[in-house]
Image 1: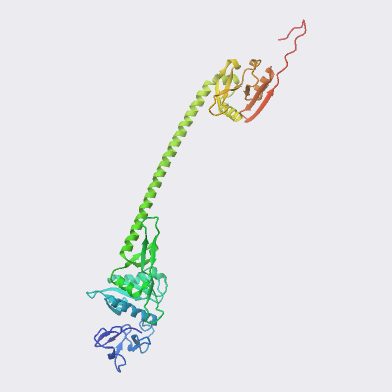
Image 2 (image 1 turned 180 degrees about the vertical axis):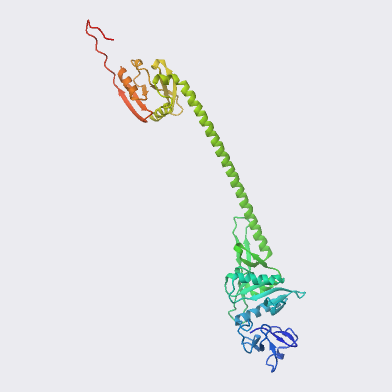
Length: 422
């Protein structure tokens, strides 16, 4: 069934209008014998009647299978009528079931402005439709300068793709239709990033929503993820302000991160340069130290290449800060080793490296002798005349041994009259 019909002389008839849109009364078409009315969609013969809910409409005497108007559901019929009624209540001219001049679209309700130009189509969409079809049909209207609002009863994927309203059928006779989804406000208070923000769909009477749309108080807005809904310009501006604040904050965060990265890179470069400088300085110091100790290393028979390993063993064995002094003639030309027992205290003599064994006759009992090998240990043992503390620190094996050396007995005296050899 539909709301429109065509008469050969009167033209187009609209059952939702008191004068049928052509200056005739309902009594002129309702139960009039011999009156010939045609369906504007398929051209089939239709008749006027009133539904059980007192809704005037036209019905096909023989329902064709391929006529959309003839096969619309009762809910579709009522929703179209509600949309037309809401548009007229908002002060606009609205016609039902209007086709474009090229017949490439037919609006359930077509709304006209004060100059009589069609500017908005209200579509009751209760049958299935894909998002792609919804966009295509919306673009088809747009090519003729007509906006469109799709209205459905259930949540469908196509509602996210085009400007639409999801409405609820009135539970009681006489009650109005209610919009549950499709009109949204943006909430943001206070206006800082710390405050919560977001879009909220409101519930309102269908008549209010249609009035806002036709009066231009709300417009289609594409939100996050490409979802489309109706909202006021003030809310769009508020959302844009929030988005700009977020973008500025993100840009500032990126700038801070870039500055931090630059500083970190500069710090790494400076650290690398400092390490290189320190390594060169240490190499120079080691070279200078080896040059300073060249005479001692020759005296001790220690390879200059293993001297750093030996000194590391000395530090490890001592467990204290260690410094090397000079080669001391009073200590058998051995190298003096100083250590510091605690921070803040002075370095004190703690040992001697590789002293000449011939200088050990009056050796202090607590002064440690440090040697790099068993060969040196044997020399010390053979020359000991007093108890000695010896540390054998082998730079090759990295092993350490700490010994107490007992004094060697003196050579027995020669018998009277005997001759010493050698």
